[in-house]
Image 1 (cartoon, rainbow over the protein chains, first blue to last red):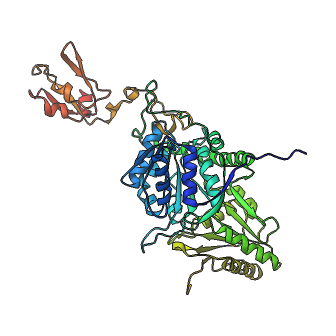
Image 2 (cartoon, each protein chain N blue to C red):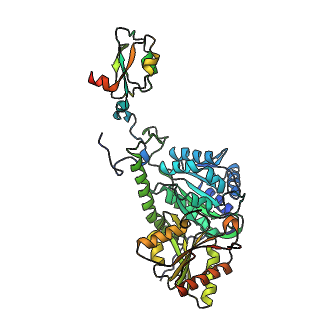
Image 3 (cartoon, rainbow over the protein chains, first blue to last red):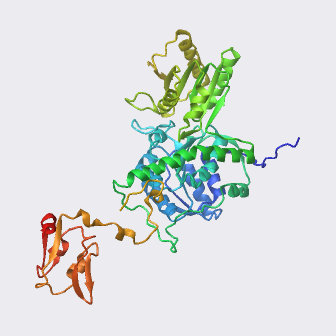
Length: 401
Length: 97
């Protein structure tokens, strides 16, 4: 039997922000327009050094705000350029208006979001409030658990965005500080392998194609606006398939396979935690500890939040006796936080009436440790034992809840 | 114009067919119609210069009339005409004759 040969990379220790900058260097995009903001600053700082040192050919636009950063990326993308950027928290909020323009104009921009809370009270630390707030902007959203995933997602994001069946912008999230500012072990592929994997961008339309003059952003009345929104739905629907395909192709190249969701000890699990992002690492440890105590504990990590993969999620959770959905953002006044709502809707539509509870955790950078996730598993065992899920809305790691 | 479904139209409303605004008859928006009194008109071309939609029809340096398929009835021509040769008539009345 022949052993599968994967491309051999180089193992390096890098902060998450530098990982993003290194991928941008390897891709060598046409345009980067970005504005520095904690905890994303190192991405822009490092990449601007690459520009200054002549290690990339990229046109780097030092803009005056994030609104301008996204506007410049949209203009560049419409002109047929491959445009990348990065932001976080308040910066993403300032981009708001233009996020919709990027997706509505079908500009396949890739953007790293170094997840940060939104003030007030003033806070620069990590949670997912920024990206969860942007979940309806028409951008594809994938999240990383660790440094290696930051690297791998940043590469795949470009391929996903530019796929002819998708043509939508992608934001890929990594936890501020927890991943962004800590050193992690990353296997970096050779530059030429990354360049070959992402290929060159071939836009269908371009402002600079004077042989085929095209107008971008014309006014769209009630008679066609709705139809163009339906096209965006189609791009999102296709993205589910494309994200899985790109993840599979990347897996064949590197040995690291990516899908829409990633189960851990889930198949025979009775109690399950559903989570997105860096805290999944702590859940793995908790699941191991509970297994050692004879509890059938498992985890479902959601990698791709937009488009949400309802069949994959419902399929993985259908036979679980109790499920805890972890939300690192807060929808004040809603009947559940973002991830909970999606999970419940996916289950309900497939006739699965599972016992599901929603935990808000880790807001404003609060650490959540494996022991706390063990408590969540014990809480779930109690739900199973009593048959009572109430209270459905819970807080993890909050004092006096 | 027959309206098309989302599969038939260009992605994101991009206009890859330059000059196709002619096919969009903005004249249906009009509430008031410009009517030119050719006894007063000196063919000074002020209306032609000021019309934001290029609807003043001209040939051999003479104003022929208004392209009513595209005139939105904004009234700028009537305001700018130095001879007050253009009046705005309520569209319904103009159609009745």
